[in-house]
Length: 170
Length: 170
DNA sequence: CGCTCATAGTTAGATAGTCTAACTATTCGG
DNA sequence: CCGAATAGTTAGACTATCTAACTATGAGCG
Image (cartoon, rainbow over all chains, first blue to last red):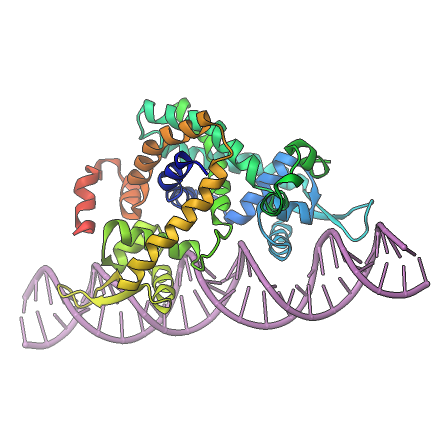
């Protein structure tokens, strides 16, 4: 590991939980928890998927995914379907209502956060914007638990992200 | 609110819970929860403080702070003291053991995160590093619940950050 | 002084997220 | 077709979080 990465980690890592807290603190008019929001966002971005895939993308265990999905079903935002290819499996997807609500509410949260960003200088906002691609790639490299474990176990088992991700985006 | 802030919010906000998840996923050899880690970090940075101050800085209610601090006391990392100036109040502080453990374990987590950063390009890391001051200031502007509520209620009640923060850093 | 009200914290009770372990149902490989 | 592997759920435990109610102390005012 490079000294450069370690130095950056020392600067950046302690900030992440705090930024999370910053936007977590109940953006107005939003009665979903963050775990639920995260699942909804994932489903919006990547479409319907199996429970195991969802759990991997969220970085949690299957029982946790079950519990979060149960909450979202109670809210009427997602639904379970049988996977026609494998009757052990379950596919989870947004409901029509879920899709409708997601757009509005995400925008409310964006405005809430934007009011905080508005108090920064233009330069500060530019610096944040310039970091967005790097953050996105960092997440792409690391959000799949299976892939992460495969890397940890044996560097040679690693393939291209597209190759590994393809079964999940079906 | 500027259109620029809203646009940046749309890019950045959805990333924050995910970055949080990324470092949350059990950095090795670490048996503290994130809420506990956050409190420890705050105490390390700002020193001993009253429960209410801690709750404000963490952005949670007092009972939540009580519960998190109880957990840390059980781990032997922090302690409660009476506030000599106000016998209703309680001051929470790191124990000697807490101070000792924090350094090593934070470094473990930094290395865990650094290994992930290491897979980015140098340019990407530079972009992240350039964003650190802006993130820090964003947090400085918004982590105090009282200040945030004052802003929401009446923009005119707002004073300089230093002025408002002074009673907390006593 | 001594009453009343405000403030600092804890306790109680509820709900959600998270984990591991154990269970059920299905698939797959000889 | 049977035994091992895989996909999910259920069970049970613990933490985090909230609001409401409680305790103890401080502060203002007749």
